[in-house]
Image (cartoon, rainbow, N blue to C red):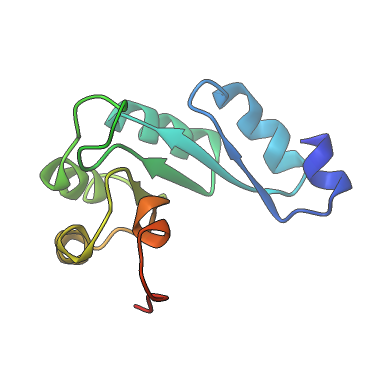
Amino acid sequence: MMLAKRLKADGVHLRSDQFDQILTAKRAKLFTVISCHSIEEVKRAQKLGADAVTYSPIFATPGKGKPLGVERLKYLLKRVKIKVIALGGIVGEKQLEALERVRPYGFASIRYFALAKEPRRR
C-alpha cells in the first residue's frame, strides 16, 4: 500500500490471500480490486468494501484449475452489487461474445491482447 501511495497510484489489485489488506487500501483512498475465485470470496470482498473484484478463471487457462464458466458468472452477477471483472482464458472473440451476454463490469486478459495481430478495439 505504501508503495502505491508513494508512486501516486490510483489503486491496487490484491491477491486472493490479501483480504486483510482491503481496509488498509481503502483508508489510503486507493481504488481496491481483489482476486476472487468463488462466490463466497466475492461476497466477502463486497462486505469489506472493495471497489471491484476479478473473478477467475472463467474459461480454461493453463495452470489455473477448473474454469468457473459463464453460467456461474451470470449467477454471481445477479447476487452481488460489486463490480466484477471477468478473468481467465479470454483469448478471442468467442469468449468476448459469451461475456457480452452476461455483462460483467469488464474483462482482463493478457493473451487476448498479446496474441492480437492488430490492436483491438471494442
